[in-house]
Image (tube, rainbow over all chains, first blue to last red; front, side, top):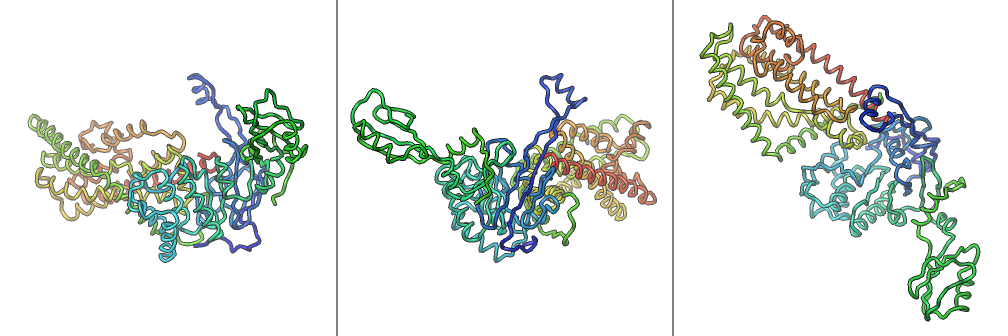
Length: 343
Length: 272
């Protein structure tokens, strides 16, 4: 059941402006004396968890929301889900200010936490689904249709009548995904959804997210440390660090702008003592395999290959594109000065 | 949670489901069921031995002949099967492991969810209680009250149940600030057992301690319904007894509401 304001399809489904959250906590001091002092004469300290984050998400988008631990990712998610009141700034999710109308907002969203299950531990998976049907007041035929479709996509039939505590992590996560989608949420928040899963289970989950997004136009906000999730699912990413958005834009553009370094992997046909090529740095050398790093703004791959062929006899050549992980790592370390609007 | 406008009538169906799920969950822990029944019969037997021995050597206190004392003890322990349940333990558990956040992400009234969950556990225990009561009646030969006293007892027991419920909820709410409540809970359990009159009727207490005990909410849980059952509170005094229970009920419910609001606010402002 939809309670949200009827949305104009051109209106962003999520909008935050200058979103900020400051936590005040008792300062911890070391030792028993410190603990007692904190008990009777507490000193407070303020921690800025989220510092002026502004972004918009269009309906049907899949956005990777990335950042190192403690960057403010889950604080943002908590504000968007309505369980945390921002210190300042504004936000709207499907036309609703989440913390002002928590219940109405909750009907529009679905949430999956990789580290925390919303299923009933002691009961068969099916019982949790039935309970969720009642909580979200999903019409019975709609519920039956969704359950049938999700069972087929996630292969739930094999364990739907097994108590959740007896499920493997992969099975439980598949159950959690179905649980989060049964009420056709407009937006789903996925927090580390593939953490701890094996390759096959990860693939099943990623395929499920992609299909739901395509079939139903569900907006997906994906928080993860596994960049393979992002590469597979999100065309756009928001990178945050230290409570601030340091990049917001297309994943491809990130690769183009920041992935300026490529690596030429050369297998030498003969033994050479030292390998020196102009405009390239030897990244590593293991036996006959030499990795040469170059900046495509300084030299082209073609020129570099020529230079290598002029100097050495080689058996093989490959060019390695920068992976998104190394780009993101560089951004965290160096920061990003630009103020990109998203593509 | 913070004064969201009521847009439409809350649906009760989910809470009915929460209750049913709690009953099903309790039923999966059958060992606990048998253990609590075994403990019940052991306690009835031991207390019966104690009172038989004490009464053999002493004159019966006024208004409390042996058969009344045995009835009181048996009914008190039967009530304990329900009143000793930590109904809103789930609140403490979910605050402790942080999963309370996911409860707030659902379109539900969160305290009502805990209430429904605890009620499921209580309903399950009451199903147990019926056979236990049957056995107690045949083995211990307890007194059967008049229809009026029986009905008054049931009403008083219900009021006492809710006094206990809110007391329990208040205790579990303190976990919003402390995260850990087991020590406080243990103290309150002892206070309830003793000052509530579950083990020894308050009529036998020394005058000063008795006055303290009557002035505390614990008496509203055990002593009042039990005194009605065995006739220590006469029909003319029923209204007054219900009134005192109701005052405690309303007071504790109000404290519960204030604590819940402050706790929920702490979550939304401090992130738990």
